[in-house]
Length: 176
Image (cartoon, rainbow, N blue to C red; front, side, top):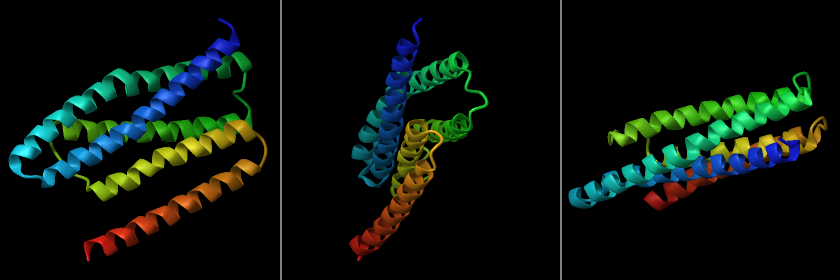
């Protein structure tokens, strides 16, 4: 198969994987917030979220994660990038992204049993980690051996920390 097709498939599945990661945590937030609803409403909502989470996770997110990895490693093999510094950074970040994915799977399994263990605020902060992985990986891939990706990533993390602090301040303000 031509390299450009492999690259296109890799990118399609990257987009699908991140879409699934972003949306699954949003569903976790709504599922968790349903815990505070009146009993009848809570049961209806949580059963609907269980169905939505299961379909998203099994039909989109897991297959996209696996196919992203397969096509990504195939490209590394075709281009023989095993000793490239930027690729080692990207593979390290991708390993971290897989850790994030697995943690979401653990949360998914708990919520499938209606075991709510995280607050909606914790989940909102957790959801930002996927964006940080996305931005960092894109900077590394596009800028490759340039140090600019480090500054871009540091700036994004600074923005993320600022947003987390703003969320905490807003939450305290809202609760008063």
